[in-house]
Length: 304
Image 1: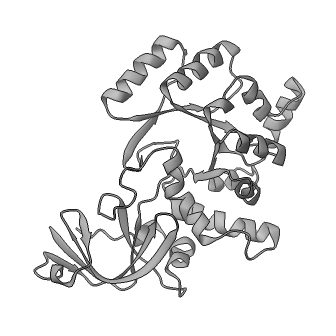
Image 2: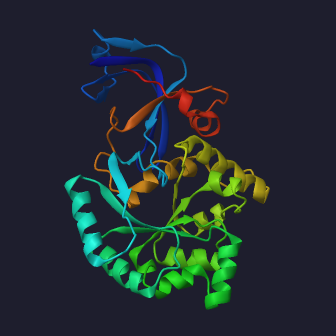
Image 3: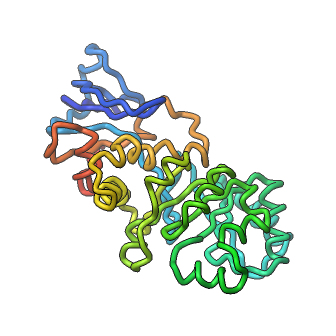
């Protein structure tokens, strides 16, 4: 099917976020064309104003996992009655069904025997461990009382940090903990909307950035627009700084930052399988700002 989009802009992310006004483009056989000779004899012409083509968003949804990351389906291991055999059987099933597995530890207060199985297994099979940690102040107090250490030190003692883990939430982690995570090459998965609704606190996003930590999003309602909005506005308000964080950095958190977790073999291609078309409100004279600050799922255009 040959589809023409009239007067569109394109936001792409290669080495940097680039915004360009592309004019008329054509999608044919899943690929995009700019040449004028391809604009004839189209099956469909979309003439809506303020159309923007941008990469598909990448994010976790730990509640449903219905979405994909870089067009790859993912799921989590079942950790009831953990044995090496149960993990191996699940891993084989994931491979058979082309599913990318993650080891998600919602509660890290696990017996040492469980860590003795999980950590070597993940090392051997190059499986990413996602760990919910630093979510509440109560959690930090519990670890201080029981172990006289932070939960990050606890994970380090079991070798989890050697796996370059994905730290889920991190709403209350101190700078010392974030520095240690940066040293180990960890990724932070922000859970901003949930943490705000539950009164958990607000993650130190700017500190994470300054330490070079890779940052991505989780959204349990499949609304990454809301996460981008919060990530862009919260640090500015908390620090009384209009320049605390850039639109481009936030946009990368929702798109290419996942490349550290899941490789994207088609990162430089713009086609229908790895992009979306958005009809923005055009409240700002900046396409990227319109996407981050006013975008929502209802603006996504189905061009078929």
